[in-house]
Image 1 (cartoon, rainbow, N blue to C red):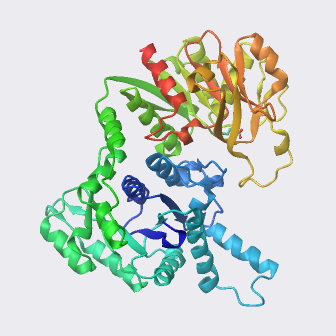
Image 2 (image 1 turned 90 degrees about the horizontal axis):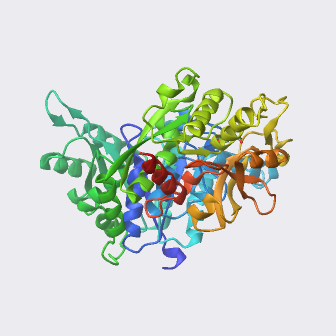
Image 3 (image 1 turned 30 degrees about the vertical axis):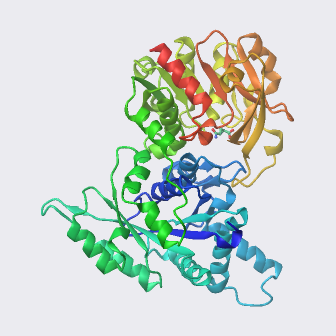
Length: 536
Ligand code: GLN
């Protein structure tokens, strides 16, 4: 299919936020891909931050990092996990970035003396950002508009969609509106009025929704479906029910049962190219739902009261768990609560421990205690990014006897900075987008556990950090059994460490969780789940 025939699907949300537009978009992407279309998914976020990199995870959950080093919304993680294909900076655009681009152009004089306005300048920039992906020759681009219809912040996006639909012409674009059908238990009824109103609100902005996807806790009775169709101006088969599912990975199959993909292809005047092939997906789900064994892994972090903060890690456990036919139960442990007195009790009965990524010194000492406990009790441990740094600090203090060893992030004046600031980070002032980000190569030592796990010597993984293992201490660590086994081939930066004489004690400076997908579970998570099962 040639570039000019790229079709556009816009996904909007109504009634409330958090309805799961990301999962619906990812599910649709999967269904269309399974029919042979080349699909990508993009998220437009109506906030003014340039990207979510500077946001506390409690604001929007995890910050997801792409191959090209963009710090993005966690929905991009869903897109990659469902489609098994990488996204990039182009797949996530915020209002902040739109305005930044327009203002930079204004300063350069690109607008030739014109008054710069939301319409047309901001909307033109939004449209440009949507169409940019078409250059990569996709058959279909799904664009998810963050926020809820009616929000002041969303207006320029909605107006851009209206303009684009007009420019693209008939059958080249469509709008899917995701809404909520609240259930009144007193009368036992699903209510359609809020959805009717939000569709009408969209119409006031000049956009007719083509398909309604209705989040609901109960099946939609025939009469309600007819009502929704009639009052929202859509054929009744275009009203799609999206019931709460026990796992997000069930959603594509539930939607397909209602011919969601066929409805969409019809709206876009695209042929039903081939039978949908979801064999592998169904196989994964079967294994996920029928595990043969169960393990419990403690996830030690400081943002555990919002589990979305560690979304990719939790999903990577699900992928690896299915692969090993193992249910992975996560015990969420707030690192700030761990003390010498309660550490044994906190981790009693666990089969493995993961020390999570993070920033800042809150909860660090608890993480150090956890690392020590896992080391001494032979509990399988995976330390990711900050987790690897904590492993290093603990070992320096308790095995090398460097009592005050620390990361320069937490104690800039430490006599033993076993974790130090990377040379190219020393003079960095701006916090946003300035870390070591995205995919970097790593060469694994022959004979190391990690080389065996990956079945390869040269790997590439995604990063997001400012501090690094201080190689001045490398030999001392190595002599005592904590061995650096992975290095950046150019800078020799230490990327991985492994403890000798321990069933599984591995720290990685990178984030393997970002690359785990349903189709390609991550080898490190698979090996970790395996090691935890063996302990059991
Ligand atoms: N705060 C640490 C650093 O900047 C670790 C970052 C992380 O865990 N992503 O190096």
